[in-house]
Image 1 (cartoon, chains in turn orange, purple):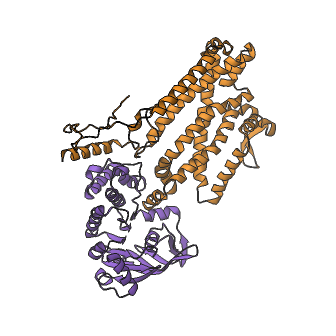
Image 2 (cartoon, rainbow over the protein chains, first blue to last red):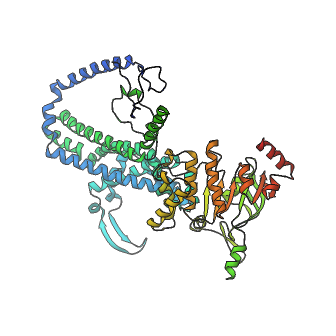
Image 3 (cartoon, helix red, strand yellow):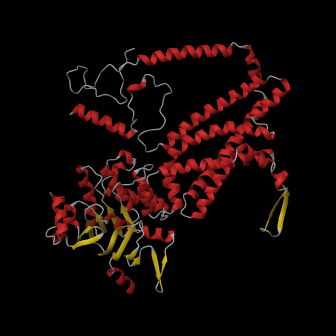
Length: 335
Length: 262
């Protein structure tokens, strides 16, 4: 397994491979890593055992798993789960950004209002919040629009406004806003204060400065935990099965309460969760690459299996730098 | 007509008894200075003497505690009406800052924007000027600082000297009437200092009013109309560079110069 590392840039053609020539590129045998291959072999055996134990065990009911895998009920549930996740995260991210900017505001009333919001929604279980929204009519039977403490112009029954879906969205979205606000705040605080001063010196006001200068740079810190939250939300959304909203898990539950094939249907649902999570993981990586614009060190490395790629430079140069490096090497080689 | 005549004779910056504390620590202890239009003032002195703080007070990045500070005849951060001072709103402070360019020791370019985008950002977003006009001006400013070939580069791809020249172009793009430089060459490798000083020298020749906090004695001697030596929050000595730097009268100035020039 001798492998000479190939550089990323074209080598000067004038260089010869004789070791005495100071202009020639270095050709050395890389450091061997026998330990990696040993570990890989052990893990391969363990994995094979695990696959065997699962695949050839009839109690898993794989035929049932795949029978329902593409069924209408499961797919409708999946769609509902995706809908819940995206809307709740959409609310969470926008609300979180607003709350974070409020929290960092010089206005103490605005900052404390944001603080109170975060406290309240983190202090109670999201399951309880979903149930409270669902049962809101027990507390406030009627919803009215009008003058505070005065005349009412329009009134509706709360039960007609808060459907199970609305309760789920409110419960998940408002709770997520509290968590997202801390993530966005961490991102904003990570940006060098010199950036704020430079923008202020150019006459930028706070909101413009946040939008154009601070938040785009904060995104590098914000995106990875936000990906985490999204993947977490995908599965947290299964909590709404308690208010009988047929998302992915509840759809599976409906089927197995009819057929008593509990385990296979839970596996069906789990495989779908795993598939969506995988897609989201790749989505996160591409979002991270987008926000790495202008940064020398991308936060996501290409290649899932860098077993042999150890000879690669750690700091991926930007395209222009790479050209520059090639030119430098040409200069050195040519000079 | 009277107003215009008055405008031309009032100094660009005038400080009277400016004081500033950070907590209980006095940083500025009564600064009196005047900078005339089209002139260059170099602020010299040991670190911690308050030079940078004074510079930052001029565009209200720091608030002064006492005294008065005027830019182009207007108070910084306040409005005076019938003998009462009113603190300016954020919007008004920002409007004043548009006319004052500032260059920082650590460049502070926006890393997620190319050189050209850095220069174009404020004129488009703050002054709301048309993009085509701004783009043309930005290109010519970048050419003027010798970076016509680097417009599409991100700050990380530029050397310190190049970054600082982009930062100067970015400040100039707002067409300021006053430029503040806060130790613009202190973070640079020695061989890159010259290219930044050349751009600043050029700017001074064009008649820009400049206040420069610097340790470059050669630059101060050659370009400054007025050299000011500060220590412990007060002005020790001020005057033409050939007297302040060439024949200092105060022992502390002598001591400082001896250290810097050795």
